[in-house]
Length: 256
Length: 261
Image (cartoon, rainbow over all chains, first blue to last red; front, top):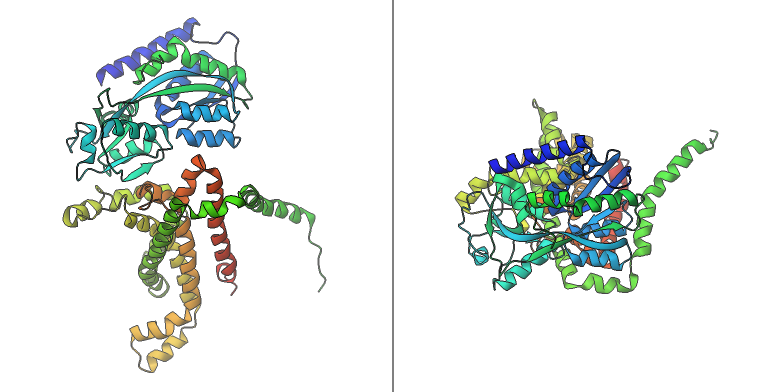
């Protein structure tokens, strides 16, 4: 906990120094206007922080975020929602958007994420592995299989040979974490980063690598963007060393 | 009486206003894949959601009748301090964002809620993630429609019939059952149908409080929302079904709802 605070403070100092020295992660050509980023719910805290840094390095640009379950974002973009950048929590939804002709350029993987079991603080139900989710008296909830996290959770359970019926199929990872925080459910499968973002309000139980699924997050500019310089600058920032360091500070694995 | 022409300054915004509501309906009708309507409607997931929706919304209406009619009677007939405040509190869900209603239900009837913790510890009863939770969420959001409609009916009825029945020796229960209820029958019916239609369409409180699981808590509106991401055509068709039901209810009740019966 203290380390995180120290780290955040250090990061703040670094960025603050950076911008005053004029060598913040600014793009080659100055960009302006608004860049609307449609990002997977699991990116909420990270992208908000990235956006703050990006704006600091590119005065004149405003970043706006729309966070939701990845398939919801695909639907919104395909129905004409004004998105400039799309950051997906899986390749399947990215492929769909690309296949339907709504992307500009090639999607690039910018982060990876692991699954983890989320439980109430202190793990009162004593859950130590995936098989414990099927124990009687454990209320297990997960994401709908249309959501990347839900699909990955199913894969992980299958690899571990565990059969468990969830009590609910939530629409995104954040609502799973929320119901654990409220104490209404005992366990769920979410990303490592979601557990870290929730701080002391939940506890994480790690899943061994053999049963774990690595989620890959691709990012792309949306074809209908009205501000492609800013969209590309934002993507470049996410892929830059500074952006990657920020992502890793939130618990994401490096892109490769 | 001279018939005045309708001024253009009124007609134009009125027409735009009407189009604002009608164009989305037309969009739904035009974009729906009519050829696949039958297969979309008869898909097992759809039937499951439809069945659950009917059971839950009818149960919610039953709950609303049992609890809401007495409440409406109290509001209409008993003067007590704080009545207006109480009425406002019990009709709050009409204007509250349903998600907020869902969160409030969690804090009251959830496993660690004010009453929910006691119910769980004492009787082992829990509501979240159960069909009972769906009924609860729907009743919370829909009952106010019944309460207000029935109260209006009670207030506008001619009370001399009740007085006559009392004078002729009927006890209060008999008067209520044989005189009051038949007299407010139309309001009761309208209130129940409105309540049912609102319950059928409930989304926010349900997905928050009861979660989403096919066959247990996934009602039609939840299925529509999730289908939008996997099978848009089916989601359009189901939307249309919900829309037609609501339209039939509103057209059927237009006189009662507008209060010019």
